[in-house]
Length: 269
Image 1 (tube, rainbow, N blue to C red):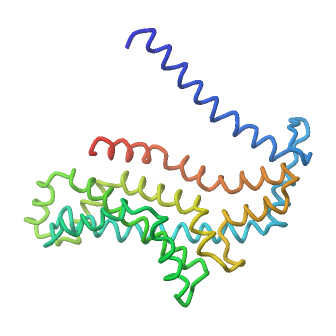
Image 2 (cartoon, rainbow, N blue to C red):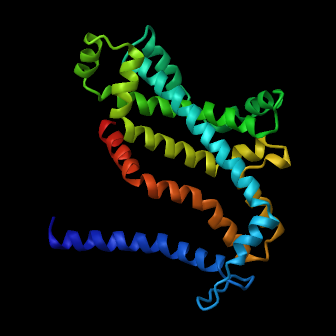
Image 3 (spheres, rainbow, N blue to C red):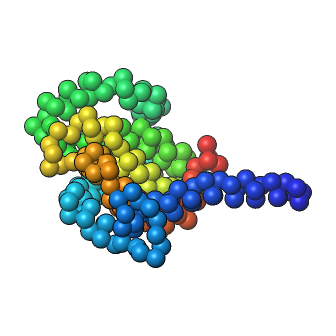
């Protein structure tokens, strides 16, 4: 890389970093502002905005609902997709090509085209209108991508390892647990983080399927909060920080595995 190319690269990267960092700093400053307009005053930081949001909007309850929902969606999705992908990619079960084709078709169907039947199907359930409805919908929608992602990961595992385990007398499940899963840990973490992020940030499905006001996820709760406190920008900013905090925390802890999983998936693709 020439010096000019290096300079241009750094200028582009720094410019994009500024575009991302500056709005975040403004949001944090407004969240700590004692003024309703959100005017930033570093000499008078107000931590009570977060306390007021937590109490007035019952954000604690809605955060727990979203955390519980996302955790269950991630856990169920990982279990289903890893087992299905293992059966298709490693065990090569009869009809695996057709099964994978049908699963892959789920990635090509727009959500809007199935929204009406999904709505009436979920409403007909005994738990219709609650968080369980959203749980089932998200798991179903994430399975296609999860199987596609994990299948590509499993196909990259050397077949000699699987054959050696089989020769040593390891059962298919033991091979899956002792060999396949440890080798694909970065891909599993990446899939888990992506699933958590998509579920956490979802607003469209939640506003359609959730009718119980006591089971609103945090995205709907912040929407109602913004309507109620539209003239209090400092409180709205504090609410936005609270909503973003779990996702940012997860990414900070797993960023290396996440980047490794994404790069590995890109190379395999």
